[in-house]
Structures are given as C-alpha cells and as structure tokens.
Amino acid sequence: MSKFGELIDSEKPVLLNFHSVKSGEEASHLILKDVVATLGEKVKVIKIEVEKNKSLVEALRISELPTYILYKNGEMLWRHSGEQNADSLISIVEKNI
Image 1 (tube, rainbow, N blue to C red):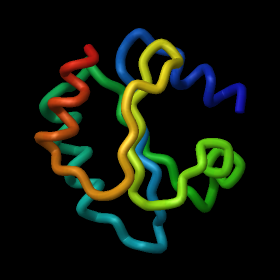
Image 2 (cartoon, rainbow, N blue to C red):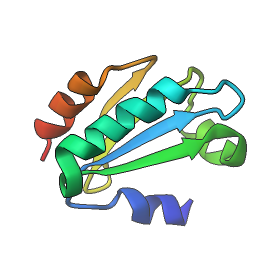
Image 3 (cartoon, one colour):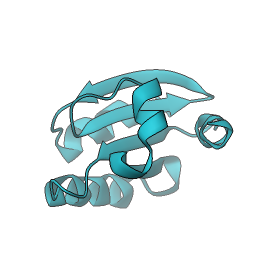
C-alpha cells in the first residue's frame, strides 16, 4: 500500500482505472488511450487489474467494474463506477489540472 500512496501523491492528476482482464474491457482501454492522446503529460493514467491487486480493491471498496478514481496530491477528487466516455473523463481531469 505504501507504493500506492507514492503513486497518487502527485501534483499532476492521477486517473486510476480498475478493471478485470477476465471481462475483456477493450472499450475502457480505447477510452483511456483517447484521454492520454488529448491530455498528454497533464495526467497520469494507470490501469489496475483487480485480480492482481485484491488488497487495494478491498481497501478502496471497489465493487463494480470499471471504476475510475481521480487523485491529486494524494486526495481523491472524483470517483465513478461504470462506463465513462473519453470526453467526460477529459473534462473531469481538465477541471482538476
């Protein structure tokens, strides 16, 4: 968990995407690609496989996939479970740059 703290303790927004490889979330991958293409270095986008990070998933009470969480300076600014489109994610991140 200490690595997670270091990961989210950033002056630039950190957008986490909790997903499952088993469910084949290709759409989420393409959406995140669009977010990175649009915002570039203004945001860190990190995909987290729930199967490999069970203790983190439990600690954050992730129950629905995909779940997106936006952090900045170690503080959770926004969280959403369920699909999001690229434009919505970009807008949310831009408000917190």
